[in-house]
Amino acid sequence: MLPEYDVIVVGAGHAGCEAGAASANLGCSTLLITMDMTKFGQMSCNPAMGGVAKGQIVREIDALGGYSGLVSDASMIQFRMLNRSKGPAMWSPRAQCDRTKFSIVWRELLENTANLDFWQDMVVSLILDGDNIKGVTTKMGMNFFSKKVILTNGTFQNGLMHIGRTQIEGGRASEPASVGISEQLKEMGFKVGRMKTGTPARIDGRSIDFSKLTEQPGDNENRKFSFLDYEVDYSSHRSCYIAFTNLDVHDNIRASLEDSPMYNGTIKSIGPRYCPSIEDKIHTFAGKDSHQLFLEPEGLDTIEYYINGFSSSLPLKVQYESLRKIEGLENVKIFRPGYAIEYDYYPPEQLKHSLETRIISGLYFAGQINGTTGYEEAAAQGLMAGINAALSVQNKGDFVLGRDQAYIGVLIDDLISKGVDEPYRMFTSRAEYRLLLRQDDADDRLTEISFQMGLARRRRYDLLVLKRDWKNEIRKLLETSSVSPEDINPLLLEKGTSEINQKVKIIDVLRRPQIALRDILFLVPGLDVLCEQFMGRKDEILESAEIEIKYEGYIERERVIADKIKRLEGIKIKEDIKYESLASISIEARQKLARVKPLTIGEASRISGVSPADISVLLLFMGR
Image (cartoon, rainbow, N blue to C red; front, top):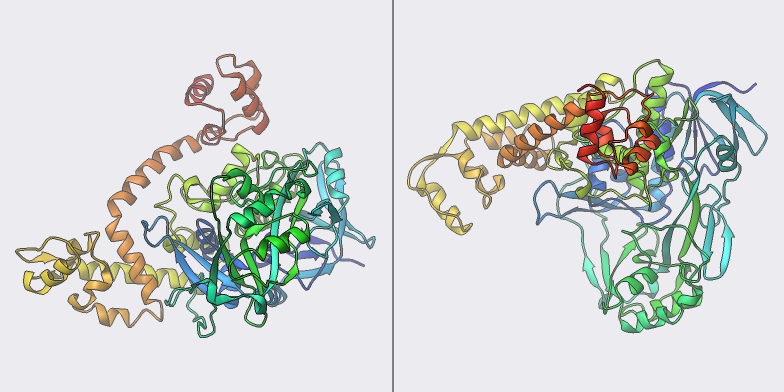
């Protein structure tokens, strides 16, 4: 007899793995169903985690006790901190990973997670009791019952791949599509749409002339994603390489656009604006002579390379011809062609902020089926869905992060409040409080909350307490130590900043933008001794302390603004408001408020098309 579970997770991509781990680690009996147990957390597109804003999300997942940061660190073959030339709000960690090892590490972690079972099969329908979820039915005819179900089907829902005029049903290369659930949900009243994404060809590294390309090594620093205190082996890290398209490449692609399903009308769904295919680039930036490409290694034990920037659905012959016109790739061999894929998604306005659907109680959506793109966005949604499903089983309140607490909060609020008209990708520009949401302070923002909830473990919380204590000690030393002109002026001149003519506190010297904490360590009595206590976390601790000191005025100002806006979040909106009767509100605002049904004034204020004047009318109507 099959057991009944608290939570069933459908799909074992980045969202499904995080959802299953979170639910199980919160004490719920959890079943993770996937079509292929050799592909946990499969990197379907580029073999990398993090990047601009995405790196912040991975660090937030780690701070909450999720696994994506741990897996990335364990499979990392290169690490870079992006946007170092900009302010710390823009710094974003990114890791190149070994694709095969990434999936293996995920499986090892999940198989060593208590309360988590697995089943290899395809889910074809949901078991419902009215508008309540009761479980799932698989292609093998198995009925699994549960209190909650989380769907993380990625691109598999009615997936259709395109290579030129060839169409192949599937959710990923050589893997079948998932059918049945979309049709059932549509009958239940869900809106179902179609989106498109794509991937480039994978090529044989033995056929690349690297001498003609620009090498892009990783950072020579002891960096990683997780805030836990383990070391990462950097001895075998690999470089990426930069190549460029040219006019010959562009002309060859232009001559073949009629064979591209995106241009001949075959594909009608919307693709990601910020990750365009090479066909889109050639068409949109017609006046540009070249486009930058990044050749990324797929792992330590393979000669396969990923061509970042050359996503395409053109026929294989055209992909071959075009790639061989690129300097360094004249003799390139292709392992797998690039392709475009169309798939079903469910417009996310149909969700609550907990990621539970509004139509079916106990059913949660996470990942690309919510209209997002990217491993990190999917993993964040999976983590939050897993947490909320488990909390609901335990009759506890929803766990919802605010826009001033995490990029994860921005992501989910954007999806629910604004919806999507193209695959959603996170950027730092989407966060109004990005100085509060830095990559270095994700643990300070989130770990204590997660520890109190029961997800983050004691070791993680203890490390947070140590980090806070150490930063306070650093600050005290800087505030109580002074430096004389003869000791500091040579450095000030070297750094291009004005000299001092009397003793000053060292913390005031550090506040100068030209001076880094590393530059003045030797001038602070006792700081070198303190650093010896940091257990291999010296860079992390010093960097975080320096940012908080240098930017404390800006950080405080942003916190004050966030607190003012947060007051709107506390003003609840009754669910039975008849927006269509509020004639003083614009027609667009009435329609969108009625569709989204925001729970608070703050949520209503972020809906696209709802103006400040509309919010004022709504407040008056509510007697505020």
